[in-house]
Length: 176
Image (tube, rainbow, N blue to C red):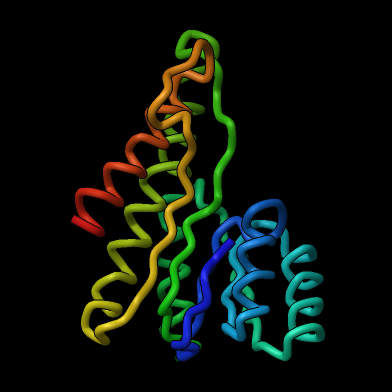
């Protein structure tokens, strides 16, 4: 659960917003009166969620269709926000997948795509939006991690290390 925040200016940008935890983050932030920028690959689901949240909570919902597997997605998202005049005061990096199992089970391109989604896109979005938050003197960042960041497991060779990266990024760079 997200705790109440009295600053309702700007937008909360949520990646992976079309389902699961991303949709739940959107619902909780909308219930607190935050306007939203919903980001995911599936436009139909984003449209449905935006309609639901606008109707239930009276918030404005912007939609950006983007695939964070694409290394240019962060630029596309930031450019869309800038051209729309949408100030991002909340950044919720939630998009993710379980990933390839073992290194020897997939070709290297699949591993690289996983790293792009789970780590590089998060760092890219933080790099693009945190400076504005600092300049305005206000901002919130949620990087969705997992207990897997601290507990290695058999199989899923890169999921835990990817989540460990998010924890280290959050603790060491964003909130040192």
